[in-house]
Image (tube, rainbow, N blue to C red; front, side, top):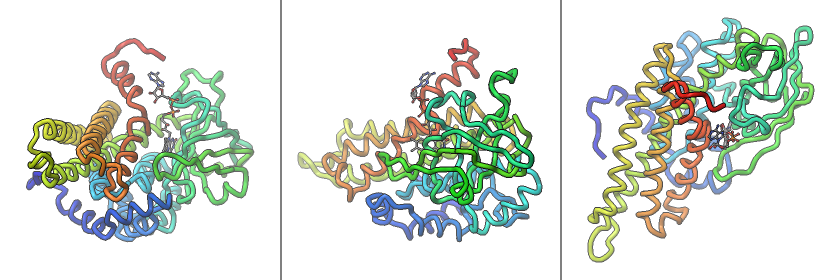
Length: 387
Ligand SMILES: Cc1cc2nc3c(=O)[nH]c(=O)nc-3n(C[C@H](O)[C@H](O)[C@H](O)COP(=O)(O)OP(=O)(O)OC[C@H]3O[C@@H](n4cnc5c(N)ncnc54)[C@H](O)[C@@H]3O)c2cc1C
């Protein structure tokens, strides 16, 4: 693949690549087959400081921006890994950094920077409301110096490998707010304490090796000081985290796209059928070239989203469009890769089927393609609201 000599992130890419080189295909394949957590890999990332990339230097982090965080995530996926095991810390960090109080930052950030604590989980989705987030049923009711939480969440990832979760709950009933996005609040939840005091975790076995869970809250008490920002403004705060998440997932898809294209290009040069490399046929070349063009274009939208996010400007449209383009491009690359590997694309030892499953998720999560189209139609183009 063509290298970019003007890449401003060259040194960062090289450093992350060097770390990833210690975790070859076989490592991620074995972790996948064992349905295990890539503990050694995440430890190595933490020790090297990459999991604290966004934490300001005064709290012990590297003080980098979303653009650099996106390069870290991209390189992990480009090396054959899956950032899904650890990307939560990157997008959750922004919620805490932008809306947490000085006392909360002093309390959490230094320990997250050293790796003593992990902030890998965000609890938004609920089984009965799905993407219609403002309708969530989980409530947090203030009683003295505590909030009492009741309700249920679904698909909440990395609970078993995180110390904290940012939880979205309704603090004012829907009937009592002017706008449905008001009256929602976010909280820092200490997961190990919560498991002893009202939160039940039920793992969901799924298509990828992704640790995700159903959560049940029965009178879970959270100290009032764990409220992040102002009560009732949580939906606005969580959108910052969601825009960061969409941009980072776009970067992961770009990494996946490059991985698929690199693998299939090499395979198409080496595989001889009918007396010539399969890559000599334009029927093979064109889908690969098309995927490459789309990955490259998606990357430009990713940079635009990062630039706006890092400048604290509105980036909802760009974050959504980057995620849409990148997820589509990586899926196109995945299909070309599995197709032109023929039967070998299905053999676990080639890793294509694993990456194929992993990148498929991003058509649905963290936001489905349809909901992005709806956002652009209504919020960017001003078409009538459909819901
Ligand atoms: C592996 C995994 C990990 C996840 N991790 C987390 C996590 O850590 N935290 C968290 O909070 N959530 C998490 N999620 C949830 C994820 O964000 C949701 O699954 C996703 O947003 C889609 O919501 P839903 O599943 O409720 O689908 P629904 O909202 O039920 O929608 C189902 C489908 O219907 C279509 N659809 C729905 N409404 C419309 C409409 N108005 N117009 C057109 N089409 C529509 C879409 O195609 C959508 O895919 C995870 C999900 C998965 C699968």
